[in-house]
Image (tube, rainbow, N blue to C red; front, side):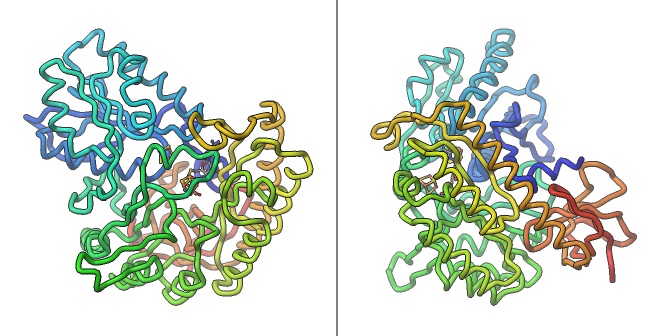
Length: 475
Ligand code: SAH
Ligand code: SF4
Ligand code: F3S
């Protein structure tokens, strides 16, 4: 089985499934510099933030290493989205702590959402942690590190209404040189009742449109061929120039980035069903280089549960948006996030989730069972009353249902020819390349002479199962 199956099958390969987060590094000489080692967990936003952190640390005389044992500074960029995410990070911290007992001069820092959620409590609970830094305070890292060097614990968890790190050029960590993330906004103003993100990432703010376009252009000039625009709710992107004469919404931003170069592919995540406009859909349809793929988390297929989740749309609204996508962008693939066993969910309401997966024909989904998060509206007002075994059984049913829908989706691709951006060797074999089509499906195919990562090739799909597409290059 190809590892890429994991995504196509829709089982999210995040902290819940992988014990270790991704180790990030970049290939640059680090002689004479102090060395930092960083692991990132959670969403793409966190991975993108780690690249900002790396850039800030570069300015403070730190270079990256992938070898934890030789590092002067060990950082973990954390996620709080589900309880299990935090448990896994605690396990990693205990490993870092062991190392610190042998090498007391090494500094340990906790960054990201768990730092923000637990604040100073984290320093009390994890005695060997030296610094705790929230997502809006990374500019303070050099100062906190200098203090920690003197033996003082450092903490900065201030959230900001303005910080977008717009002027910081991220250091592309562990990059294949072909695809990159660009953060276009931070925070979230929605109040989905299950979600901790508004508390860990603060208020929503959009980044200067010019700095986004400039970053995309710079990446293209350096050989990158795909950018993913990141935000918790990209459809509510809204930037105004300081003199208030220019206003840019998400559809307009997409267009500006698409115009950087026809060979630069644009993806984006995450869209919110209540906010995605026909304007955005028409912009996607208008530009060949904006990918025909929308990640549109449904969470539940039942209107009563959606209302308890405070998602501010119902089943009918979601279905209407799917219809609009299918009409305006006929070849568009749609994927989703789904939560099973939310507070008071009945068996019948769970069936509505299964039926919306089939009706919407999701190409894949990220699926989770509900995990109550302290401080969220659901934790305060609703009873987490679906027993864990039922949550898990429903999750299994959702996974099985999605697997069948993915299989059907993939089988329909056999015989079709897609434009694929080559990303590198397939996970399974260095005789094969992997690359994605516009619909975000990974396709593995035998290498051919003259084709290299960063090239576009036409690939005919020859074999498909629920998780994998295989093909061959055609002229
Ligand atoms: N901003 C994105 C989602 C970010 S969190 C959006 O609105 O779609 C990613 C996914 O994690 C969510 O879509 C949801 O499916 C899941 N999730 C969030 N909080 C959760 C919780 N408390 N328990 C289980 N899954 C959760
Ligand atoms: Fe969380 Fe909802 Fe915001 Fe997504 S839109 S980050 S689920 S509050
Ligand atoms: Fe996790 Fe924070 Fe992202 S809670 S999912 S890392 S915004």
